[in-house]
Image 1 (tube, one colour):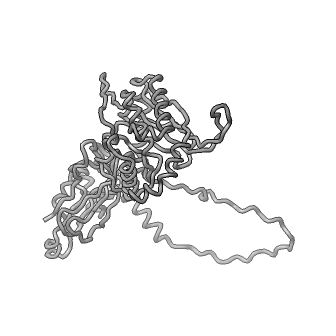
Image 2 (cartoon, rainbow, N blue to C red):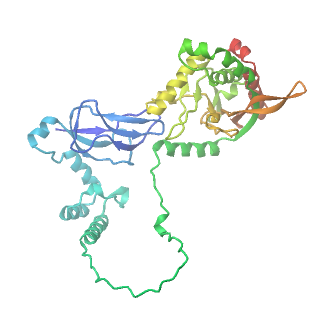
Image 3 (spheres, rainbow, N blue to C red):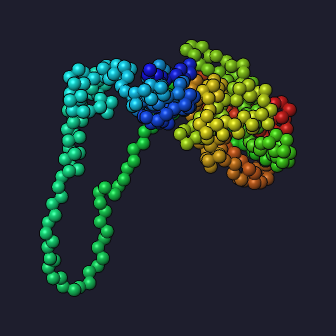
Length: 411
């Protein structure tokens, strides 16, 4: 009997997905638990496995189509049914679906012309296929066949007239109009959601940014002193991010309105510190969350971030790992950015941007010296955070990072 492949429940906050790519094709055998199709959501890509073994009989939802939990993606046939029939046969589920997506006249016309309704994009109400849609596809197929079978007329060769021998300047190469190539790419569900959320953040929040700079000398000296022992003891490198995570948490304790969320006419202050770490990915930025980061050691933070990076590369991040952050840190410096304005990650009201470390002349105790400096930026929602608190928050982050021994003691 036919087995329907349905879109599973994805997550509490995910109500739709886009069909990414089918990992199996019609007619291929499938084992229990084997991935069939990849779905793209605004957070992660999820694979839909086969609940039972058999043969993939029909694919009903193609790449790029938007689906919701419970929608039928395709149909499997049990291996025994395929063996008895000798070949996959139409299933009631497929016929019922075709029944609803085409008018009776269009369905009859498609049968007479040998056209598969699934090949037609309907233009009628609700995407229903009309007779005009079927006629348009029939005309297109006829034009293609005529162009393929059109006889080629060969003209008799014409002898060229005699040409005087003379030296001419070389002609400029002709550029055909078609030489200006273009490529169209379907935006992934994640890319579309990123675009929507960035515009939404700018339209719904009164976003402002304040800047400062941090002398990274002390942190770099501390890393140089302990990096080998840290690597040997914990198996990960000691980077800059743990220092900033701890500094941010210290500043959030003093300015809790930056660790909050605006819900209607109420400000919800969070008494826990789930820090989102922005990670670059070929398909777009992802922000996995360090849960209870205030209780994590430097080594635990580094290990967690290393796992996030690996999962982002392999596209195995889970929805739970991407939800519920209270504040975000993003590091454009790893890509060479010297200064930028980070955009809020709604519903959070604050985000810290780190940047590239650059040797610059600064004045210390009345003397001009060269120090490794980093610009930092804090974007905040001015509806709930005043400029004074934002500036003081960033100053506090600067103080803690510039005094890492004190940071270790307080953290």
